Image (cartoon, rainbow, N blue to C red):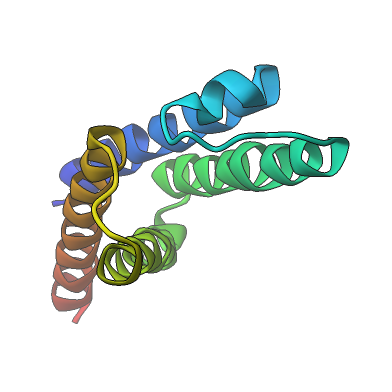
Length: 130
């Protein structure tokens, strides 16, 4: 189970790092798929901070948990809460605002699957630790 957890953390970490790096490099292009218009220096700053810096920070946490076994469970819990929060936010938006484009729908599916997988591995670690 530890090997599966490490692979999951690696793939998830790569995903978060790619989002962060791409957003740092070109925030306007990175947000094009979700049709998020960036019209000011303040908006650029906000996007680079949240989609660049924070995403890379999460990626580093996930990578760290691969080499620091004691960090695996907290990283899995953090990942499930982060992606689960994204899922809840998207579902609330669908109910209030309507159906988004296919890019955002794909993100919803990916975030949902990631949340379920992270929770599964988190609880498996709990069971195995006892």
